Length: 403
Image (cartoon, rainbow, N blue to C red):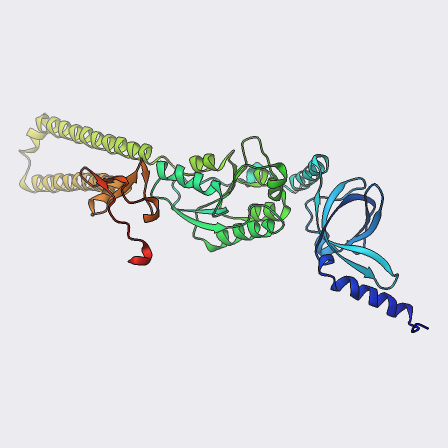
């Protein structure tokens, strides 16, 4: 006869078997929600997941439920990440849900609208919270994948428009279960670090499922809390995410984000040259006016009468005239100083000033070479110098490891 055991021992044994099965510790389960209950005291979600033939009881504890970007509803099709176990007291086989995602366009759109309405009511989309972008950022924070096309698009546009820009890359996963906390953490750390003037969150195009992570509430709240301006550059022009509504500026593509954030250096240089020319003309005009006024005063009858004044009065007039000339020269020196400062700024922005210090730029087929790996032996390259260019052929390549 078999050994006699208690019900408690049986349930505990079955629970142990289930929890020791590695297959059942991390399961992705698809089903339709039914009998959904949001427990008003504990905040736990209790529901069933069913398909055409079967159903299973499920629970999602408050610590996981409060991170959802939407509120589950009866009839909604979802995919859940869960572990399988046994509720020992009742001997109830059930799944313990750790995360949940809408399954299908209808469910995704419902979840999107729920979160959008919630955050809008809290004021996260309000225009008065939008921060202006810096006119000439010194350092730009990038939150994107280091291997993605979005990063290369941004770098290519920057090289053309504003090659003196610096970047601080925070590489993250841009889709999947781990992406949302990584992206939210990256925004927060770049903002708190104080080293960047603007943050671009970027990802190339993809399906709606691929881009769904950017509808995560934690990312939206991190962007809203950032004191550094945040630019959303996710997907293509037709794609919209919750991050687009919260960010200080929405760019339709990563390339467009670079266009909006980076000033056109050539246009800025032209503006500096125009301002310099206008300042010089203004100084000349004012000098001419001063000269004409002095000439008119010297020719005035009152000056002739003044020459007959007593010596003490003539000396006082001469001192006041000297003081007036000194004041005029002081203003001229200050104006010249401002002109010189503008000229120095113009020169510092020019990439040719870097070349004049002995540096050069190597290009192959019009593209700038940044690494020896970008060229091969026998390639024709063009070397830009401060004065003129050289057309060269690559004879030998020395890698960084060989230096």
